[in-house]
Image (cartoon, rainbow over the protein chains, first blue to last red):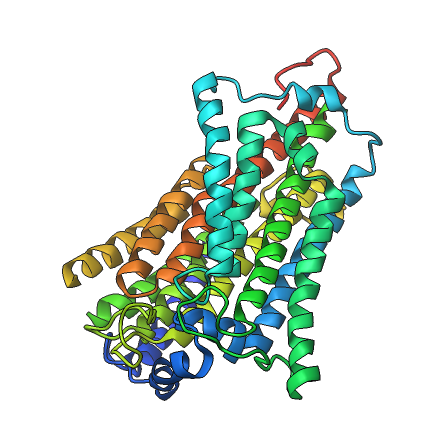
Amino acid sequence: MSERARLVMFLAGGAGLAALLGWALAGLPAFGAFNGAYALLINHVVVAQRAATDAVTAVNFDYRGLDTFGEEFILFTSVIGLAVLLREQRGEHTGPSAQTSDEHRFQGSSQALRGLTLALIGPIVVLALYLDSHGALTPGGGFQGGVVGAAALLMVFLGGGYMMMRRVSPHGMVELAEASGAAGYGLVGLGGLVFAGVFFKNFLGGGTPGQLVSAGTIPFSSMAVGLEVTGAFVLLWTEFLDQALMVSGE
Amino acid sequence: MSVLAYGTAAWLMLVGLYGIVTSRNLIHMVICVSVVQSSTYVLILSVGYRVNASAPIFADIPPGSRAVDPIVQALTLTDVVVEATVVALLLALAVQAHKRFGTLDPSELTPLRG
Amino acid sequence: MKAIQIGLFVLLALGGLGVVLVRDPLRQALMVGVYGLLLALLFFVIGAPDVALSQIVVSTVAVPVMILVTLAKVRSQEAGDREGEDPGSRGSGG
């Protein structure tokens, strides 16, 4: 189809879609006037019922735990799909061509920049662990903490080069972290089934709201998901970097 | 204000679709897909917003205080992270297409060349 | 508060348009970072700090890195293709 015909098609279709969207959105409650029954209910009972002070994390890992389980496996399968796609190409070379990537440095990055990057790793790891473990108390949780944790390993790459990143996060370990995070979250769900008769029921006592060990299974779910997300992001970055840095030096 | 909030969401969706339709580069197209996806976040979170309400964190405000909807936030929050891995998968497909066809232009990806 | 929200909605609409209209993926990687930052700020002012946190890391670190590495890979493939056709023109890879 020619570019022009395609554009005309889009303008017609887009105008139709815009009209339908306008019609649909006009029926929504006004911005700021929403009064969803579930939202009101959860905001009232979440602290008393689950001892979690962050309602969002409580919904995520407890009230909606099964949904998050499914969502987590979208993440898991898309990383597996990516690894399969990229590794199929990598069959063309055997050992990693270590010299080229070991000497790979960002041209133009100064010693000061590299030093700063390396100095940031510690604080980023602490932030990631904090977000993972305090998800039930303050904004944060496994999903955010997981990405932050993966960013710490990216800093190793930026500051120390690719081979150093591979040394601190070998493929096997990263895969193990991702898989055991996914399995760990499933086990929390199974625990609900075994100890309380319902999959993903919060089977541990709530404890005192605001304390680190509170909100029952939520911190455990959060940390398992954090491990999985860290593993997933590190894995997909290393797969891409393998492609970009190693095959080219073949 | 409603018009602006919901209008922005609809606008982002349409703009992203325009980018997908007119794209001449698969990487550009993947990024446009992520713009379309982000329009849903804007819409869902705008629906759950309540005026003069705090975030649904009851660490230092009493439970039951007027707060925005936590459920829509839980829906969006997981999707933001999951979407990033889906973008990665799409980029991997773009790399694969480039490997097979030697081009990133979607209009040159014809089955005859495979 | 309301003025900030209005400003951010407008900036976001412009930012989305910018991301789409920039046709060079390398510049787009930077635009995605800016756009993601605007999204995160908007989420923050409409009472969604949890979502803002994940948006900020994903779109300022995770996605731009993936785009840059994809571009590096594609360019090295192109360099490899050229070397295949004309063995004399080595160099300028990666």
